[in-house]
Structures are given as C-alpha cells and as structure tokens.
Image (cartoon, rainbow, N blue to C red; front, top):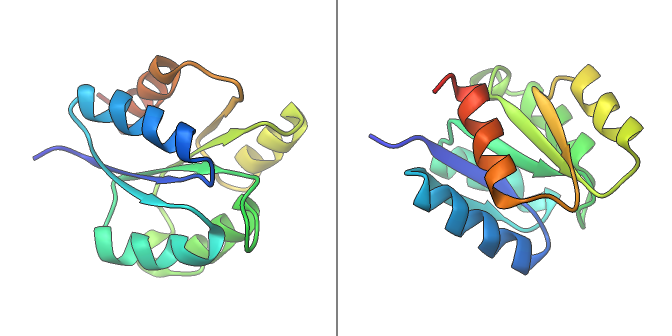
Length: 121
C-alpha cells in the first residue's frame, strides 16, 4: 500500500505540482489549503507524512505543527516544511519538530527525494 502524503499549501499551482510529482513517485496525496482545515484533513486521511507550507491563511505552519503535536496520534507524524520565508524560519520549524525544510522556489523532485528520505525509502 502506498504511503499517503498530506500537502498543506495555499497555492493551487504548487499543490498541483506536488500532486503530479508525488503520485508519479507512487504516493497517494491529500490536500488542505489552509491551517484551519489541516487537522481535519489529517484526521480523515491518516497521512504517513505532511508537507507543510509555513505561510498559510487562517494560521501559519507553526500553528499546524503545534496542534499536531498536541494530538497523541499525530505527535510523531513526520513533517517536511516548505517555505518562501527566510531560511531561519525553516530552521526554527526543524527546532520545533519538523524533520526538514525546503526553501521555495523548489523543484518537485526535491520534495519527492526529501519525502523518500524521511520515510526511509
């Protein structure tokens, strides 16, 4: 069974790029476009990993990570952050529990490689 990746990203073009790249690599995908809906989608879809943008409407990626860590079933769920913010924000996300971060703009294959690395395959 393919691993499921939840992409939390407000930019539709980036969501589409990641969907194409991740499904071509054999992953299932689910999507949330803002911080407010991210946890509901995570509960419904039960992802193996989250690709999380930091700059989101209705709360940022740090809020999503904090909420995830407060729910026992998600506290160990791996998160890969993608961000157009200063790299120090990505480093802060790693300090707060993300497995890694990727700066925007990025290539779709970069995200796939990082997802594979984090999932151990």
